Length: 150
Image (tube, rainbow, N blue to C red; front, side):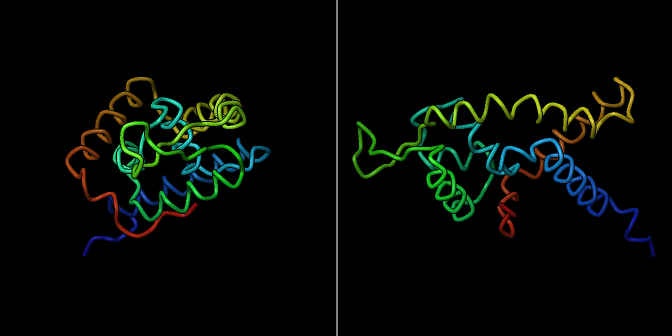
């Protein structure tokens, strides 16, 4: 039987742990998690997005996203307001504080990616990103398993 430590799922989990640790190091002064950053970034790209569309863009289940949005709203980084076209729908917008945090965090997030991929050559990085994107696309829809850490 193959040693579980060499299985792709286990290796991906280890890399995810390394990525989260690097994020914590680079963003220590920002009081921000990777899940919160992804959420803020996506809202910044699509102001007035609703939670359903946002969950599809960031691949978080609705319950995880709801808890993340609650935290971001308490930190005054995000505002929820009624949609102009359907008052039952809440749309999301970054506050000035939220926009500033994304701007401050983005260089740190790029450093995380650089540090994570540093051991690889440019060609290997490109190949790795291509293969990961391909696997992610094949498994689209399976992302909403157990709740994510926030």
